[in-house]
Length: 340
Image 1: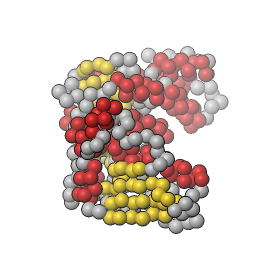
Image 2: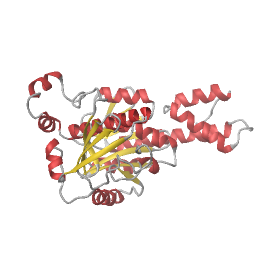
Image 3: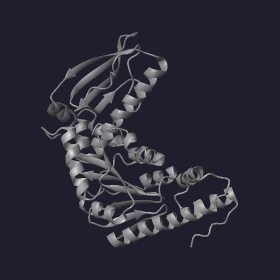
Image 4: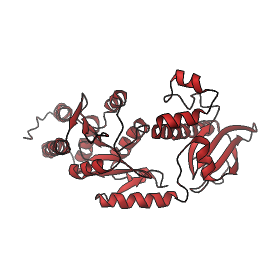
């Protein structure tokens, strides 16, 4: 978070219990550059003249905006799109705050903040965001933790718990990168979704009260969680194509409302049963594991073991498909892999 120029505390850190409005002004011009509406420490809406995009862009059509521009568009958006609207609005708020932070930092402006505290119920009602009175973010995080432990996921990051997700994903660099990529892409889509990478599975699990990220190599455990946790909405082709462009995973896996599992393989979406999904994911992970072991033993003798592993993991981030990995390894080291 940005700190006020000349020292002082982090003026964007309002604390996890604050609900209300904070107006941030540039001291040199004495004008408001950013207004943020917080619900329990989380921005739910923000406005700034540096953000040119309107909050409804990417959610409402031009026709919808024209019909409701003089009414309560927030109410219409919530009643029409539900969780997708809530996620979209929070993403817009975070983008607005981040953009303003960057500009303030670049120009070296000093800010001052004026806060007005309001009951969280009033803030939620203003934007028609669901809010459960008496449930703090810490309590929700503990509740989610207990549910994930029941599914056998002892390590996870709960969104909104106040912890640093990058701290959770410190062990493997690509974990952070994948979460950063897919979090934005899938922010507007509710439900539990998994991303199968060469070395493991990273999944966003949607539970009552919040979302959490887990890392596992157990496809059967994942299928169990997807079966009993909140199912995903229909995932648009444009979203899946965006995942292709990131080259971050081999499969995207989710369960639809009728219980069918869907596996996107980079070219088409497969409709599978639970057992078929498990077999598909396990077969891929086993194959990639054999390839990596073969590649490790085939590296030139002059490359230290630790460096060799880093080089191979780097290739996996570019090639979630096994054929792509084998091809680049062969071109780079002049070795044909035999992993059958």
